[in-house]
Length: 373
Ligand code: F6P
Image 1 (tube, rainbow, N blue to C red):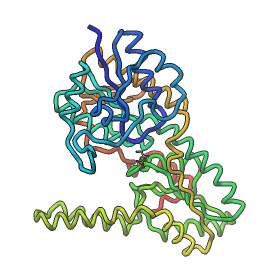
Image 2 (cartoon, helix red, strand yellow; image 1 turned 135 degrees about the vertical axis):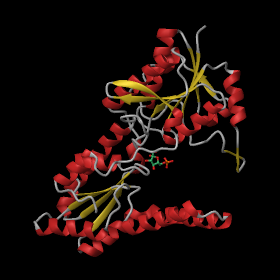
Image 3 (tube, rainbow, N blue to C red; image 1 turned 180 degrees about the vertical axis):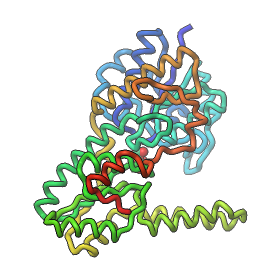
Image 4 (cartoon, rainbow, N blue to C red; image 1 turned 90 degrees about the vertical axis):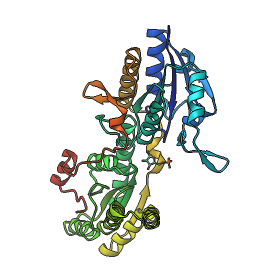
C-alpha cells in the first residue's frame, strides 16, 4: 500500500527548505505514488491539525523560493505555549499523526528540531529529519542547507563594507549570525578578507584586537573590517560563564543551583549588545572611528544558492529512499557526494562547533587575520 508522509519545517527558516520539500514531494509522488501532507508552522500546525495536501501543483515553482511554503515556528511539542502557559501537547500530536494514518513524519530543522523529532520517535512515531540551518551546527553532517546562501549574503556585505570603511578610514564591525557556532562568521570572514574574525570557539582579548588594528594603521592601512559572530565572547566574559558552569557541575543544593542558573542567564542576556560594546571599546583603544553593521535576518532571506538547492534536493530525494526501506529515527546527513542515515539518538544534544585547528582558522591566521587571541 502507498505510504502516507507528513512533512513540517521547524525552527528558524532558511533558504533551501522549499527545494527540500520539493525533492521529497516530487520523488514520493512520481516514483512511489505516496500521499503527502504538509503541516503548517512546524509542530504547532501538527498539534492544531492545520495542513495542506501536497500535490504536483503545490510542489511546482518552489525550487527558487526562499523561506518555507509551509511556514515555521519555534514551538516544541512538549512545551507548547497555550494561553500563556507551557503545556505538553505530545499526546495530541501523536493522535493527529495517527488520525492521518501517517507512516512517517519528516521534520526539516536544526538542532532544536532534531531533539523534538527524537522525542516524538521515542513516543513511537516514525520520524526522519533533514539538517537545515544557516548556522551549520548540526553534527554528523558535512554541511546543512541554508549555510551556503547565508555565506554568500555575508560575504557580499563584507565586500561592500570594505569600500566605505576604506573611504572613511574607519573600523567597521560587522555582526554575523550563527548562534553559538562560528561557521558563518569564519567562512564569511575568510572569503571576504576580514582583518579580524571573532568566533565563539576562540574567545578574544580586546587589547590584542586593538593592537592588530593599530599595526595595520602603522602600515598605512587606515581601515579595518572586524567580522564578529553573534556568539563571540571576550576572554573575561567567557571565564565568568565557565566559572558558573563549573560550580553547577558540583552544586547539589537546589536553591544554590537555581541562583547559579539565574546568574548564568542574566549574564547571557547582557551579552545581547556585545557588538556595540566591542565597537566602542575599539574606538577608545585605537583612537579610530568605528561603525557597526548587524546583518541579522538578511542572512536568512532570499532565494537559495545553487549549492543549497542541490544539497536540499539531494537530501530530500534520498530521504524518500530511506522511507521506502522503512529506515526511521534517523537524520539524513550529507557525507561527501553521498548521504548517510545517522540515528537521531547520536545527533541530539550535540552541536557542531568550529575546531580551533580547523583548516579555515589555520588559513585565516596564515594570511595575517587576527583571530582575537
Ligand atoms: O538558527 C538560525 C538563527 O538565524 C541563528 O543564527 C540566530 O541566532 C537565530 O536563528 C535567530 O532566531 P530568531 O529568528 O528566532 O530571532
